Length: 215
Image (cartoon, rainbow, N blue to C red; front, side, top):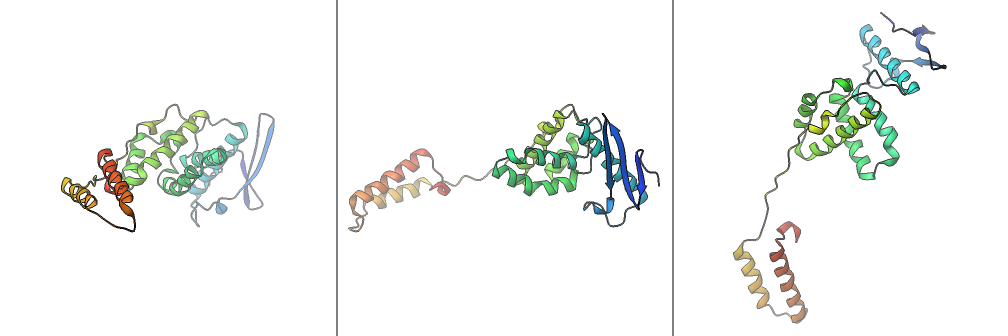
């Protein structure tokens, strides 16, 4: 198995030793402790994982992401950096949608994640969650632009389906029946003033275009 440069085997585990900008990096790496890895990894998978971890660690130490990271790692970085600034609703949205995004797109290097792949992912989602997922993709790409991992944001051009709900209105005959019933309604318990108020509410609802579900 070929071990990436600056990584050696030490006491049965892998160790990254690297010096950059006068800063010494000495970090132990263990692919078996990565929950995203399969229980049994081939030599090629281990080599790829070590190279990815090496790139991530050096990039974080220097702030230089000239070698772009997989999209899933950029998503994690964004969530960690922006967590305190997110609203509760946005944080809940990310928490609910992020696992599926990472499953589908997480292993693709962010500079290789094009509009076609993302649109295919969006199209496979329930209509109600498409907009939220596009929102996440756009924000993560904008974050990646800050670190010069990508030059543009292909997620800006993604399209999502809108939910065209059938409008549910009372018919003219139904409105006439309601107003007629109120005009002839007499009840000593609520009084004529309350009946007048009900009629005024119905007329206001009708004239404002209020739907049945808004009542």
